[in-house]
Image (cartoon, rainbow, N blue to C red):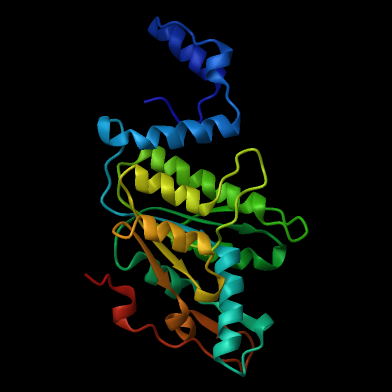
Length: 257
């Protein structure tokens, strides 16, 4: 199978070795919007095609929008606990990941965000937990490039893996600003149309209405899970006398059937 991101030069060399005709440049090159359109159009007819070219897997694909979850955690914790100063609230990533994975095999895991030097230890934790980390330099308050990087990882998984469970940790529903015009709900819709189930984990106050609309259209295969009830299990307050993270109860990290 040809690698997803093989260059045109590599494609031409492969074709010449196999005696195949080399596609014209117009067929090998396409804009990001064309690529996204091809993927979403392909998803509609997936059920009529063989999935033999997709890699089988029996786990979950987890994608974490770290900025969205972190900011929402700070806001939720400060609302629930009067003594929590928002800017001192931190995430207990080990507990967050346990809630998302729920003792299921993680086939692929992605965590994306921006990278001021002060947050490098956060990304080291994600890496130790088995996640691919994709970082963008922060440009003002615009996180769009970060989001689109995570969208790309999700689409790549959808292209390469047989249908399974996609876990999205984000409440963001905004459309992209680039030519690709992607969004997390669009990623979820593509997954659903390709036969995947989708689980969304978000803070209730920061969940976009786009997710509610999508759930109404796909009530059997798209679920929304609010993190609010776990706030004291996945957050703590930084500092010597700050609030400690409560031990995560076993049922919080076990899939309920």
